[in-house]
Length: 368
Image (cartoon, rainbow, N blue to C red; front, side):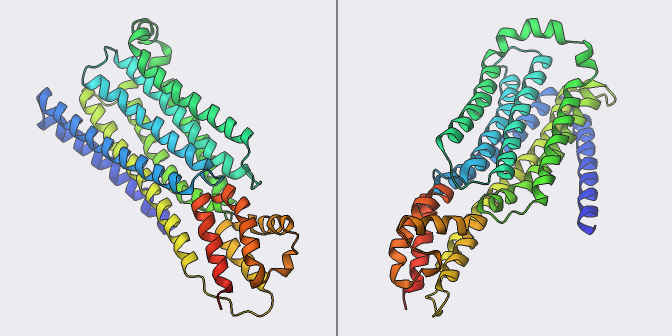
């Protein structure tokens, strides 16, 4: 309850700061040049945070390799990349690199924003629904089709904006779709669906490895969603319904003040992912030689559960079956054979490097 009160007060305070900043900038920065400088500097901040977030996510993916664990993280990474393309539209527009109307610009970035949200939603959906330890070619092809389709669609929208700008503007400007704020309402609906999905994920048991890592991203994604919803509300009361009468430059500045903390929380989530990755590997370094004279198998399974969660027993049984060993008869003397067999399954689940690290740690149990 206390945390919720803090969050609600933070949102109110932040909205108040945004409104005060906008009013002061609009009054003080009377000339267009000064306003342009402010917009460009804020956009540079957004771009820097965005690039750092992408670098963090790519670093995580690289270390985990081709694994089941990486499957939802790749969706989040491409979703973040697509989300960054919305700012590319503003960059091109602000520097007059494209000759398009405000209507074309706003419509384009919203469609790309929807694409990014769909990718985020797919990441959560996959994590909730995945039960198998396998990551087969059918799943890889399915993922690639969705990821590349939405990424290329977003790029095509940007590349072709000049082509369909004139005809679209004539049909869309001052139409019921424009004045009603329908595109913002769609954004709210999609945000509601995504928020429900995030809460559903938070209620499930996240003891498996994929769930543990995605759990680090759910709060940042939810906070990002709140900030983007506020951004859409801001656009609706300024550009759409005209409740607040501000210049276009000031409206854009207001939007940037939502995007900055938005990308900051995503960057925070990417940092949490990397910290969990390092802490998991560090925990393996702490494995000590076993002092147990019986139930040695239970100690091995315990280590596996710490690092591949609910899949531990299934994977251990599969590894034992391959070498015709009983799961209850794992002994220090046969750990080499067991870990060699085990790696075939853990590599697919958590990646090549973490898998080898896990096997070496299990082998340490036999170093009496």
